Length: 202
Image 1 (cartoon, rainbow, N blue to C red):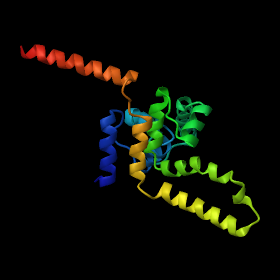
Image 2: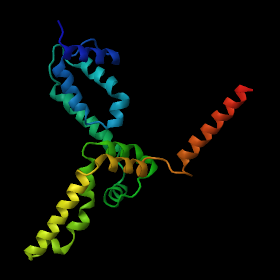
Image 3: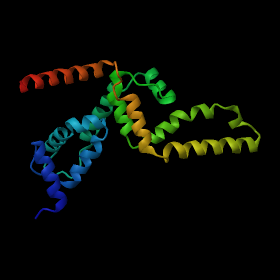
């Protein structure tokens, strides 16, 4: 009789249409390696990839082979690298919170929704304090004061209202602004659909 863990794995694999049963240990091994791929990629193609990798695993395997693990990790990080913004765009985004170009907004959404986003915000913003010469002064009282300021920034960035910070970042870096190409497309689509509905009622 299958355990509840086995049943859930079987159901997920069947939904992908590739295999009928996957050992829970193998399923965990596959999914842990698949985290190398971007979040949006996993949401769109993750189950298909899971079913394919599980189907290609040797019969009775409880873990991915070293070769399959390396291939998954390499593919995931290559995908991340291809979709990563250029260095100058990334530095402006990370260090000065400059709005990311349209081509990289999907990457920005993954970054904002990521677990470590508050920590990345802290690391990206702390540079302006670290370059302060008083921080490295021999005056211990001044040094303690500046390092205390760094601690306050850390707590405020990482622990105080992280979800509010995420929402603000989504609005700034991901949401379309009035007059932008994407907002004009949505406005045109709403206009066409509204006109079609009005004509249908006549």
